[in-house]
Image (cartoon, rainbow, N blue to C red; front, side):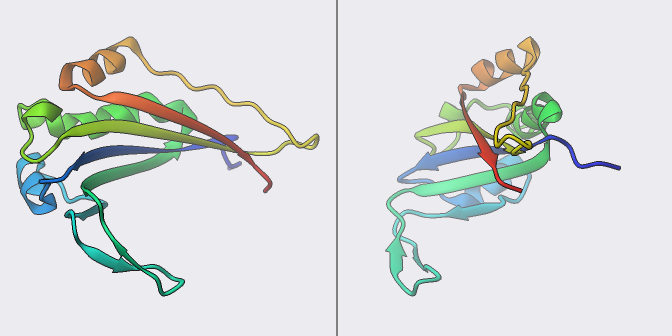
Length: 141
Protein backbone atom coordinates (compact mmCIF):
# COMPACT_ATOMS: atom_id res chain seq x y z
CA UNK A 1 0.00 0.00 0.00
CA UNK A 2 1.46 3.37 -0.98
CA UNK A 3 1.53 6.41 1.28
CA UNK A 4 -1.12 9.05 0.59
CA UNK A 5 0.10 12.10 -1.35
CA UNK A 6 -1.33 14.45 1.24
CA UNK A 7 -1.61 13.83 4.94
CA UNK A 8 -3.67 15.91 7.27
CA UNK A 9 -3.90 16.89 10.92
CA UNK A 10 -7.22 18.35 12.08
CA UNK A 11 -7.33 19.98 15.51
CA UNK A 12 -10.19 21.42 17.55
CA UNK A 13 -8.84 24.30 19.67
CA UNK A 14 -10.78 25.83 22.56
CA UNK A 15 -9.15 28.78 24.37
CA UNK A 16 -9.88 31.17 27.21
CA UNK A 17 -8.35 32.77 30.28
CA UNK A 18 -10.81 31.01 32.61
CA UNK A 19 -10.73 27.69 30.72
CA UNK A 20 -10.32 24.58 32.87
CA UNK A 21 -9.41 21.55 30.71
CA UNK A 22 -10.84 19.00 33.15
CA UNK A 23 -14.22 20.75 33.13
CA UNK A 24 -14.34 20.70 29.31
CA UNK A 25 -13.29 17.06 29.23
CA UNK A 26 -16.22 16.24 31.53
CA UNK A 27 -18.72 18.18 29.42
CA UNK A 28 -17.49 16.94 26.03
CA UNK A 29 -16.96 13.36 27.17
CA UNK A 30 -13.52 12.95 25.59
CA UNK A 31 -9.99 13.44 26.89
CA UNK A 32 -8.08 16.31 25.32
CA UNK A 33 -4.99 15.49 23.30
CA UNK A 34 -3.42 18.34 25.25
CA UNK A 35 -4.68 21.00 27.62
CA UNK A 36 -3.53 23.54 30.17
CA UNK A 37 -4.81 26.39 32.32
CA UNK A 38 -3.67 30.00 32.19
CA UNK A 39 -0.60 30.38 34.39
CA UNK A 40 0.51 26.74 34.08
CA UNK A 41 4.27 26.40 33.80
CA UNK A 42 6.15 24.06 31.50
CA UNK A 43 9.76 23.58 30.51
CA UNK A 44 10.88 23.61 26.88
CA UNK A 45 13.48 21.12 25.58
CA UNK A 46 15.96 24.04 25.64
CA UNK A 47 15.44 24.30 29.40
CA UNK A 48 13.55 27.60 29.28
CA UNK A 49 10.39 27.88 31.35
CA UNK A 50 7.15 29.06 29.74
CA UNK A 51 4.10 30.38 31.57
CA UNK A 52 0.90 29.78 29.60
CA UNK A 53 -0.82 33.07 28.74
CA UNK A 54 -4.25 31.49 28.22
CA UNK A 55 -6.06 28.25 28.91
CA UNK A 56 -6.26 25.75 26.06
CA UNK A 57 -7.98 22.44 25.30
CA UNK A 58 -7.27 20.67 22.02
CA UNK A 59 -8.29 17.44 20.34
CA UNK A 60 -6.31 16.15 17.33
CA UNK A 61 -7.11 13.74 14.50
CA UNK A 62 -4.70 12.51 11.79
CA UNK A 63 -5.47 11.08 8.37
CA UNK A 64 -5.45 11.51 4.64
CA UNK A 65 -6.40 14.93 3.22
CA UNK A 66 -9.30 13.30 1.41
CA UNK A 67 -10.80 12.55 4.85
CA UNK A 68 -10.87 16.16 6.11
CA UNK A 69 -14.67 16.38 6.25
CA UNK A 70 -14.97 13.16 8.24
CA UNK A 71 -12.21 14.22 10.67
CA UNK A 72 -13.84 17.64 11.24
CA UNK A 73 -17.20 15.93 11.67
CA UNK A 74 -15.68 13.56 14.24
CA UNK A 75 -14.32 16.48 16.29
CA UNK A 76 -17.57 18.44 16.10
CA UNK A 77 -19.71 15.54 17.29
CA UNK A 78 -18.43 16.01 20.86
CA UNK A 79 -19.73 19.58 20.91
CA UNK A 80 -23.00 18.51 19.26
CA UNK A 81 -23.53 15.60 21.67
CA UNK A 82 -22.98 17.95 24.61
CA UNK A 83 -25.83 20.07 23.20
CA UNK A 84 -23.64 23.17 23.23
CA UNK A 85 -22.11 25.83 21.06
CA UNK A 86 -18.56 27.00 21.69
CA UNK A 87 -19.93 30.17 23.31
CA UNK A 88 -21.86 28.04 25.82
CA UNK A 89 -18.83 26.13 27.07
CA UNK A 90 -17.56 27.40 30.44
CA UNK A 91 -14.32 29.36 30.26
CA UNK A 92 -14.14 29.25 26.46
CA UNK A 93 -13.67 32.67 24.86
CA UNK A 94 -13.10 31.35 21.34
CA UNK A 95 -12.43 28.22 19.39
CA UNK A 96 -11.50 27.12 15.90
CA UNK A 97 -10.71 24.04 13.85
CA UNK A 98 -7.19 24.04 12.43
CA UNK A 99 -6.50 21.94 9.33
CA UNK A 100 -2.83 21.30 8.50
CA UNK A 101 -2.30 19.66 5.10
CA UNK A 102 1.18 18.27 4.37
CA UNK A 103 2.58 16.88 1.13
CA UNK A 104 6.03 15.63 0.23
CA UNK A 105 7.66 17.36 -2.71
CA UNK A 106 7.54 15.76 -6.14
CA UNK A 107 10.63 15.29 -8.36
CA UNK A 108 10.63 19.00 -9.30
CA UNK A 109 10.43 20.21 -5.70
CA UNK A 110 6.74 21.12 -5.82
CA UNK A 111 3.45 19.37 -5.30
CA UNK A 112 -0.26 19.90 -5.12
CA UNK A 113 -3.07 18.63 -2.99
CA UNK A 114 -6.85 18.90 -2.96
CA UNK A 115 -8.90 19.62 0.10
CA UNK A 116 -12.68 19.33 0.18
CA UNK A 117 -15.05 20.24 2.98
CA UNK A 118 -18.67 19.24 2.50
CA UNK A 119 -21.44 21.80 2.80
CA UNK A 120 -22.91 19.82 5.70
CA UNK A 121 -19.67 20.02 7.67
CA UNK A 122 -19.28 23.73 6.87
CA UNK A 123 -22.81 24.22 8.22
CA UNK A 124 -21.93 22.25 11.36
CA UNK A 125 -18.92 24.49 11.99
CA UNK A 126 -21.18 27.54 11.80
CA UNK A 127 -23.85 25.92 13.99
CA UNK A 128 -21.43 25.40 16.89
CA UNK A 129 -19.71 28.77 16.35
CA UNK A 130 -16.33 27.67 15.03
CA UNK A 131 -14.11 29.15 12.35
CA UNK A 132 -11.68 27.02 10.35
CA UNK A 133 -8.04 27.82 9.62
CA UNK A 134 -6.13 25.94 6.91
CA UNK A 135 -2.35 25.66 6.49
CA UNK A 136 -0.68 23.92 3.55
CA UNK A 137 2.91 22.69 3.79
CA UNK A 138 5.03 21.15 1.03
CA UNK A 139 8.02 19.43 2.61
CA UNK A 140 11.05 17.47 1.44
CA UNK A 141 10.61 13.73 2.07
